[in-house]
Image (tube, rainbow, N blue to C red; front, side, top):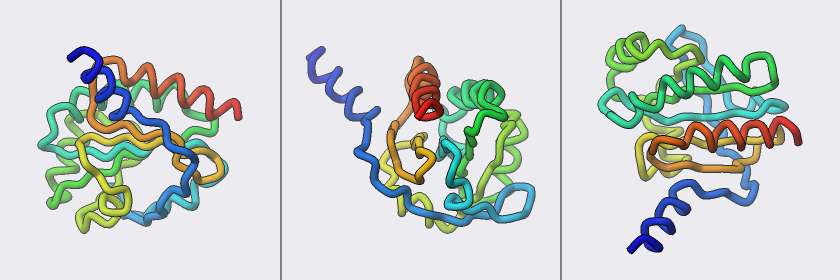
Length: 156
C-alpha cells in the first residue's frame, strides 16, 4: 500500500519531457490581456486555481512567497483562475493577497489546453517555452519542490 501511495505521489508531481507549452491569451484582473508566449525567455510557473478549491487557498501563500523570492530573477508566476464568475475570482484573489498576475480563464480555454485533471495544477515552463514539470493537486511540501525546480530552471 505504501508503494502504491508513493507511486501516486510521484505521478502527481511528474516531470515532463520538454513538450511545448500550449499558448494562451487571458485577460488579467487588472484588465489587459497577457499571453504566455510573450513570457518566453523567462521561467514561468503557471498555477491553475479556483475560489472553491480548499487546497488552492492553502497553497497560495506559499506561491506568494515564491513570487517575492524570485522577483527580478527571470521568473514569472501566473495565477490562472478557472471560476465562471470573475467577481468571485477577484474577491478571492484579494482575500488571499495574491501578489502576482491573476488571469481569468472563464471560457476554460487554457484549462482545456492543459487538460486539467486536478485543482490546483501547477505547470513549470522553461525559458524556451517548454513544459518541464506538472504538479496536480497540492500537498504540504510541494512548495519546496517548486522552489528546487525553479532554481534549477533559472540556472539553465
